[in-house]
Length: 222
Length: 245
Image (cartoon, rainbow over the protein chains, first blue to last red):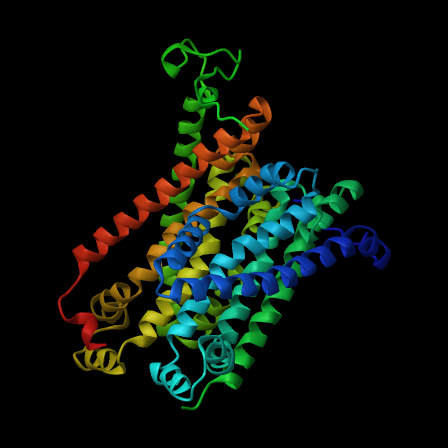
């Protein structure tokens, strides 16, 4: 039995190895959430449009993304991006693009359910007031749908944050990688992995407690 | 960019085309390697699913039915295992736990990966089982108690048979998630589909074909799991049961 030794732990050490990774993980989470929701909204509206020419491509895209492991999608984009863009691309940029494209499919399904949960009368009332499709969506349906979906969207964001650790597959420097490199360089891999697990746990757990609070707050009274 | 599907028929050792696409005398082609990698993916996923179902059922039931301290313990279990990324959990099983539990050192990596994946998913299944049990009308439990059934009997005969049928659809998506998440086992050198994809891509430089093959196998597996769960759902359906709740 070996004893754990966390004495190497210091702010300087954290700054050298972990800070950069943590920032990248957080940045990736935020960018992928915002980008994913934006692209996901477009996909959801396409699927709900009732026009086959729009609905079918969106549905195929979403189903494809949802049936392939994220690690494989990361590998695909990492392989294809250079030839699509015509120039080499770093693991970090490739990860950002992949996450937006991948998470959009999941956000699309959440949004589709959210928009579908808005009573039909709201839409009809909007049209009766003379609003066009875009106005109706922007002013009546989406604001209500988003408010109801905030807890689910936040939960998806927690999952997304956990998934950012998978950029390990293409060698991007994220939070986990930061701890791993530190553990190797200092010869204390066991403590580094434990520290990584604790940091992820603390972040995800506090976020999920926040979701619980928000859930009670945004509950609609109809 | 041109497709070159012959890469699958090449030998992994010499790089020459093997007649009939299958190597002989200890030589294997990339196709054979991919199929065996598929086998590892399925093995890890199945084992993890078995672990996840057993533990998840237990934890979910304990959390809703057992006495306070036990329920609290179950809640802690759920929070612990679902708030750490699965990749980190696999590293913990592979790099950290064997130091404290020396027996684990003798286990093959794929068993450790399956344990990690299974316990990670058990937390999610526990949550679904809990939701299913809580969705049951309280009268079910009360009626069972009034009939003189003990806790274990109530759970086994009254609560779980109804709750499980209710959560079957979400268990289906969890089962499909396990197949996808098994790809994380690449990180501890289990030669499943994803690790095959990485290594074969490097060796052959035919990434497109290799990735396409792997992606198709993943989709096929997900489809098979989906159909199997649909079959189970149809087999276990009790007419009128879910309509009431």
